[in-house]
Structures are given as C-alpha cells and as structure tokens.
Image (cartoon, rainbow, N blue to C red):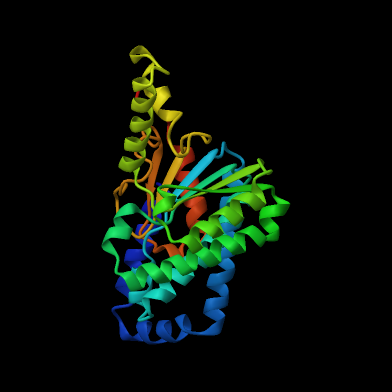
Length: 291
C-alpha cells in the first residue's frame, strides 16, 4: 500500500473522529498550543532534511526555472496590502536562491515581470514593483552569498521598456558579477516568450537580408542562438506556484522538453520542502525529449 493511500486513510479517520465533541474540543486546544506547534515545526524540519538527503542521492536538474506567481493572492488571503505580498515575494526569492545554491544547481531562472504585466497592471502597482526590482537588484549586487558562490546575475527581456532606475540597477548587478561563472541567475523582466521568438526571427531576417546567412542555414539552432538566454541551457524543470497550470508566455521556445511542476502554494509561502518535492517529482520522471 502506497504512502499516499495510507495518508488518505489516516486523514479520513481523523475527520470522522473530529465529528465527536469529546474529541474535537481537546483536539482544538492541543492544536493551538505552543507544544503542538513546536512538535509540528520539528517534524517538518526532520521531514525536509530526509527529503534533502533523498534528492541529493539522485541526479539533480542542471537548470531550474520558476514562475513566481501568487504575491497578490497571498496578501489578499491574509488581509494584507498588495504591496506587502510583493515585498514578501522579493524576500522569498532570496531564500530560494540560497536553497538552490545549497543543492549546487548551476542555473536558476525566474519570471519576475511579463510584457502582459506591464500592459495590464495599474501605474501605482507597477511603480511599486519597479521600486522592488531596483532595491532587489542592488541588494543582489552587494549580497555576500552571491560573491562567495561566484554567481553571475543577468536580466533578460525587453529591458529598454523598463524605467531608468531599474535599468541602472540591472547594470549594477550585471557588472558586479560579470566575472563569475560558477552559477548563473537569470531574472526575466519585461519578458515575453513570443516577443523573444519574434526578436530572434527579426535578427535572423536582418542577417539574411544583408547576405550574412543563407536560407538553408536558418534552423532551430540558428533561432536558439539569437534568444535572450542563448548562453544558458534549456530548463530541465519549470515550477509554477499558486495553483495555475499554464505557462503564461514563459520561455516558450526553451521549455519544449522541460518537465513541468505545479503547486498550489502562493510564492511568498513557498518553502524549502516545496522546492525539494518539486525536484523529487522531477527525479521520478523519465524524460523522453519528444521520443
């Protein structure tokens, strides 16, 4: 009998017992006690440590990409201001980067701001996001972890569409880490997968019109070499948080054979255990690359 089946049986028995007042009253008191929370916290830490050991014993993905979704829903679900959700999301990215580096995964790419976001979000919310990107990128440029691990930081997308303060922060982070190559952190800003492909095709067309390449030379490799992210390999694993099961114009060309993992957890609540479960799910799969 599988672990999930046993777990479901235990959950059903517990739900049945809680229907009785003699059980539900003390259960409610115990569940809210400090002792209970201490026990749960310790159990979670032990479980996460065991999970970490398991995934480290298997082949880890070389490139993890994350669609960081759910900042606003996280805030709304806790009756917090929207900007608080975005701030928590920024802080969560710092944590996740540390966890990924601890696993020695070389490439981490995150979807921070889409071209659709720029067109759909209100000016006030966009300005708050731009402030966070400016602060976050400048923090990354100074982060001791980034420098101790030799992490190269880069931003891709239609960067020219971003405010000057964000472009300045991008330049600062990229210049401060340009000599590093042990790990590559890529943040997608003002990014759209279709737009990236269009820009690559335009570049190919320009060279063809100028006689630099011949028609027979135009193939998938030629397109790949002209993408924003041409210097990094395609993602092995794409994680999307907050319950949505779609790609939303993210790395459309690059994720043709990536493994996809969706979780209901809002991005600010994404835990180390959630990351490990996504990686373990990836390790259980047999990658076929379209075969």
